[in-house]
Image (tube, rainbow over all chains, first blue to last red):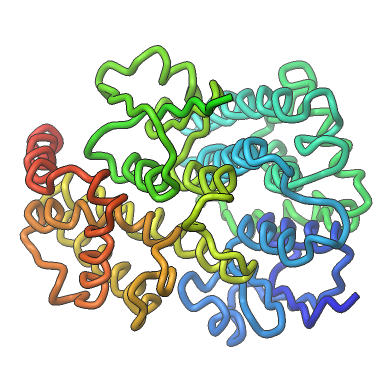
Length: 227
Length: 219
């Protein structure tokens, strides 16, 4: 099976890059990973994504595809006969998956990140409360989408699992930073168990960064203000 | 069994109009229900509990939310009908989705500020808005539509903003056409399509609406 020339510009620490890598793994696509150096942007990145200048960028036979969720959909469609489907097969289920993936990025992630950028204790508390409320929505989404199966997508991981699951490394780092559990076994039991299954998936496990290494990187990215 | 298609919407919404256009492009019969956003219906709150926003497409009792999500859904469900809204080539589809994402971030944010702010904030928003439109114009190139010869996904996304061009210009006291002449030409083409003519309100009514809400937002 000819997959063409596939490159992915990214970084080991990026949630968004991980989404693309999981999707490529699911489809068993071999690719060249071009690691960007933190603090600089390569010429290839600037040429391939002139609009946003951000990673990830998938380059398939010299044609760039940008934006992580769009890359995942592209991987599913371009290699539709390889491996399992990443998006659900029914239009309604696809619409639901896309809705929640957008919610993860537009609402949930924004709240998670604001814990790391919070100016003081009050701000942090408010951010934590927001994350908890939004995670609760995702717990309900999981129950609705999974329909008793192990993943949002059913029997195997799919678009929404990838969209949310790629955050699990950073989720843990933010928990440690906030000194507060953000994925609670008693409050969101379905998500909690799903998270373990997701991290142990063979297409995910080799990509999930070590918490300690990610925490160290987080300290560089989100330096604490000097006392 | 006949399909039951209901659209919960708000007449001047640049997002709601996208759903209306997509349904009409496909020739789908639907029931339009006007929402009062200051007094949202129990149905809207039930069908979109997460965001409580329009548009919501209710197809045989099941809700689909978020405008471009609705447009993709319409394209996939009524795929046997004429006028595919997304290209069939997977790379072209990725490009279409990329530009719609660009529109919903880089055009949306400044557009929103143009009618709801004044002074320096509004000036900055106008600059960002024109910059974003110029990037889109460059992507459009010489094509009649973003979709090439065919009106499609990106054009539908932009039509929501095209219908607000006059209101934005009047609120911001500036002119878009000298800055983006080919985008404006494509906008006029889109605004003449049957599905669009039947979906967009009278531009004067949008201007009137914009000034009414501007009074509320700008002290």
